[in-house]
Amino acid sequence: MHDPRLDSLRSALPGLRLATEPDELLHYGRDWTRRWTPAPLAVALPGDTREVQAVLRWASDEGVPVVPSGGRTGLSGGAVAANGELVLSLERMRRVLAFDPVDRSLTVEAGTPLEAVQEAARAHGLQYPVDFAARGSCTIGGNIATNAGGIRVLRYGNTREWVAGLKLVTAAGELLDLNRGLVKNSSGYDLRHLAIASEGTLGVVVEATLRLAPPPPPVATLLLALPSFDVLMQVFQALRERLSLEAFEFFTDVALRHVLAHGAQAPFDTGHPYYVVVDAAAVGPDDPHLLDAFAHCAEQGWVEDGVVAQSHAQALQLWRLREGITEALAPHLPYKNDVAVRVSAMPAFIAEAQALLATHYPGFEVAWFGHIGDGNLHINVLKPAALEQDAFVERCGAVTAHLAGLVERHAGTISAEHGIGLVKKPYLGCTRSAAEIAVMRAVRAALDPAGILNPGKLFDPPSR
Image 1 (tube, one colour):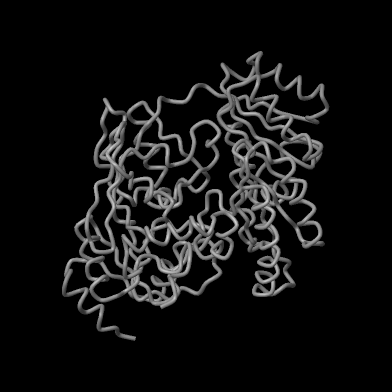
Image 2: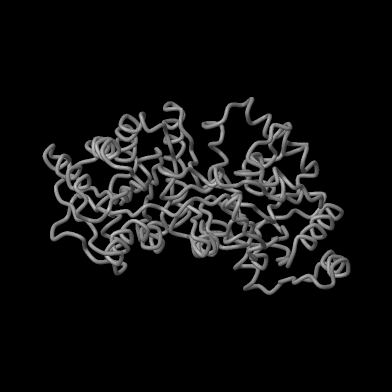
């Protein structure tokens, strides 16, 4: 159906690329959750910051809600446009704008894929160390909007630590240049950090200046097979004491079985309940510190089997067992929980969470994996083929309420790295106090008084 508001947008911005075909609306109106039917008004694909500003000025004047869009690899419904919103896709804004060898920084547009940023850093002999499996499709703007973490948080931290400055377009179309790449800046509120993890509710990130790191040291990749969940933290502690860990990731036999069915190569002749893949600084696969650490864990009975990658190709094969989990589980329409507690609280939390899931999901396949070194667990409940999707989501949502209560008791978070979006919105109060949420609402209202930016995400607008 023709909407006359789009005529005024075309008139205001005759050069703007605007998509309105049904397949385009479907593609741009959803993220990886696949739980909402996309129904955007249209998709605007600006080519530069000036067009982003003009689109938001138009949206503000017309009262049209806007959903900022990056790679749409999110898992919390943060990029869903299901209620006639204008999708503002940054995918055409993917230029690498500048490299500063003195500051060791890279300035890029928000639509630049993470993998392209990593490649640009390597071309200058440096690295952008934030990394995860969706590197080829996620974008820097989306990473900033959710403060993305990934597999190397243990060594390098989250996205927040690497954003030296960013440019943000407000709902009114104003361009804010935040922090400007400074290392020290004590001149009042750091709005840059407010924008990070705000899920597009405070403004649209159009440009980022990213800090780069020296190239990583030579590493060895290990895959360890563990007899039980109980020894997981002992293995982590032992390796952390003896080695310089770059990454420490775990997954269960259920997760591995699906990755193998998806085409990966089995690492051992026999199966084991739990697995850990580790990157540690080492001069090579025969590094004595590496072998001593492995021998110690084996002597304690914490490790039943293990392999050290003998080549880069074999290291990639071992990492595929972890990084291929999300793709391998996707056909089973998993219900995902992304929680975190302090590392010291992990043993108690895991024990209670396992008991909770065993009680409420009897007969369901539950695939666990995650970033043990930073306290982050991904819990994926797989939909039985015979159960209707709506009934499955309703049942899982009821259990998530119990899980959120467990997270609250352990002073954790219901969303470690996927954001709140639509999926986790009912449980925000388990992570943030009422006073904190009130402050968040006030900040949002100050930057977007009409509430047009990603409405309904994080929390509902106040009733009028």
